[in-house]
Image 1 (spheres, rainbow, N blue to C red):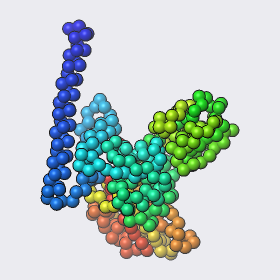
Image 2: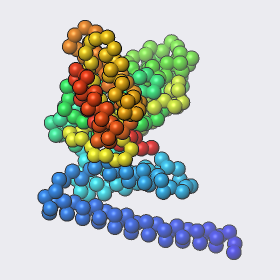
Image 3: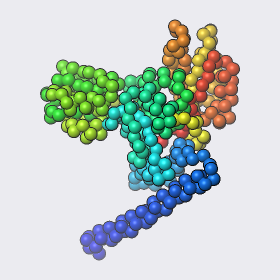
Length: 361
């Protein structure tokens, strides 16, 4: 068999497989519609999006994966399939820290897929209010970066919000220097978010030490300004470069190659167990000797692993703090439930901000 006939055989096999895949996708979409019809006819809760179920499905997809595509790619393909099927039942409206082209939008699309109605908002508190008012089903907000630490405004909002944490997204962050110009020598001013300035500080010091650095509300806003002002550049995502018509002058200028930001999904209802969960707590302790030890002791006694602890001023008095704590497990898991019951007896205030599936690739 010659090379041409071999290639033809492979292409015919691909066409056959594509036909089978398309038919299976059609059948899956029909099942999604049947789920919606059944729920509506029975009067069952019509919350078609189930964070715990989606996380479980994606984990099974990755467990079955035998290559040659990697786990992240396969999970992305199934995420988009699930997103499109869910949109047949109910288009999801998702609020995020905008404008268009921010990393928060990228996190929203990674978590919910492309088949959503995006709602970009100007500030983190606006995202919280939009979801609280029922204008959006869920919101996406940044909470911490592996280089620059926590996003304080997000943590502070949880002290007054009734929303739950329903999921998390981890997004590898690649920063690009962009503008209308074509060379570094033409850059006189750089716009970007304060966090991005911190994440690219060493590169900027080495390559553009004389350029003015201006912090703005978002990287997308920076890209917009760079497109309007001569001599101005922005640090933003490649998506922002496309949206605002800018040239990428220098790609991947972040100082840390593993630079990652964690985002939270916020919503109006708690999430059921998925089998691989995390719980976030807001705790206030009484100002007395040994109070912090008392706060942490129940987790040790019940063998519950703490993955993060962050303190914030409570705003109730000078040197009075609250603690944000992440622990392994769902609040309904026996060890976590026991630790929380014991902690509630000792803490001045305890609020479970949410139990939710751990981030999927």
